[in-house]
Image (cartoon, rainbow, N blue to C red; front, side, top):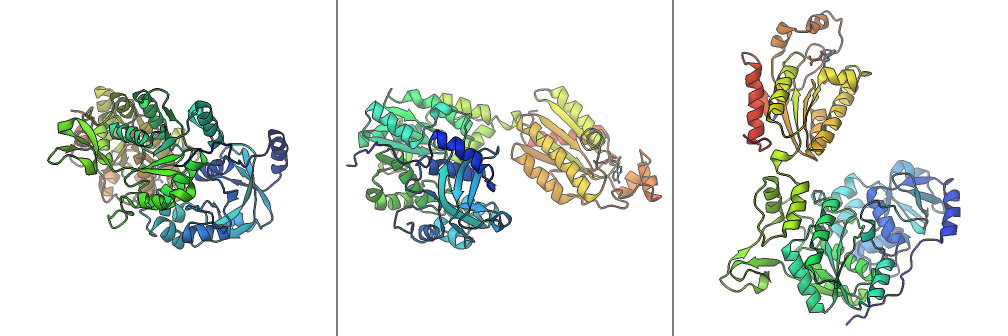
Length: 568
Ligand code: PPS
């Protein structure tokens, strides 16, 4: 049985006085602005979470870790912890140089004494560390599309920890946790790692794990970076707090870990075990598909469901932490109780709700049964994931000048306001150009800036639960696509092509602009002397020729109803 060693672990920080002095000196150094992921890595490097690493890995350590999970001196460390920078920044840096590392607000957190600079073989890193050079893996995608082309490595001098404004009392460094365990007299502590809200199955599993190991329980959720699309950590922490009193008092502790996950399955599980050892834990729960990234581009799982358990089992003695392995927990209806999937009594009815099914139920406002989760957790989740009929969305009209976009948009706005429930904002082409984009003309570059501004405002409105109706010409497909992406991060995007023909628009010429364009008095006029790329697959296409405005607006309403965005 492993015995806890709760003595303080080495950190990379200098004393307070030295930090004050260094901060001034470092201000004169070339500095690198850390990405959110690098800031998470730096925090765990400095506070001992990634002990025995003393900085961002140099090339020899990196090569060893990528190839066989060991640094150059043979230390087991399965994850490359590297500082990626742009080629341009790297050009001005040479080994032997010190650089200041700043957070996103420009605060100097540490000094990196650069010993190594190299161009990594990213395809090899992807194959060896993540198992495949496949962009469907979030960390591989990050590696190729977000991370810089050059790596810098070297030891760190820690000046200060990154500042957190949220849930301060729930965040602990390895040494703070060790001190807490010492104070409580906890000798055996089992850690539960999670990036999801806790439901009954998790509670059941953690209960059993603590009982089996005869240990206290530490729920240690990741609040740094998890898998894109996960429930945000603010919501999750409120959910964790809501279930804490379901555990026997003073046996369980909640502590947040500012880790940037890579979703690397087995290697990630091993890394998590090392991090937990550093935080003073004696046992670590590894369940089914630990830190799994989902399906690859062939629709298959990247890793086997119990690969992570196998790898941790192999190295647990070397790390000095004991793995508590768990099968998936499922609910057995006849027994009204949870069982590990391989212990389910024969012939009984097994109930389970997958993550995808849970999201669907939340989206559609459907029932989430009590056997699955706790009412307090469901309430929190419903607050941040309201059903579609209560979420914000954007209706984006596009079409030629004079096609009828503004008129239909106005009619739609009035109809939605009549229904009530959500604030409605109209971002009409002309109005936006007057208030937001008055300095812009009609070149491609200026039109793109204009549309992106509209997209940004609409995405903020959508994020905050409102309805944005946009009615610019928006002639370019790629710009409309990027606006769609901005908005779909927060809610639905409904593109409506007002497909009135150029002949009809010119015949109507309500503002007299077509005449001026034909005479060459207005340059770059859409449809006459400038392009309009009609959308190929809009959510809706309306034709105003021979149709009433009211009818067109009603078609949009029907579409919104069909999409579940408004209730009949
Ligand atoms: S864009 O391309 O989306 O940025 O255009 P938008 O902001 O919607 O502005 C279109 C309105 O500006 C008037 N206008 C012109 N349109 C197109 N091309 C040129 N060169 C031009 N010059 C002025 C025109 O009245 C448009 O209004 P709508 O409501 O579309 O008729």
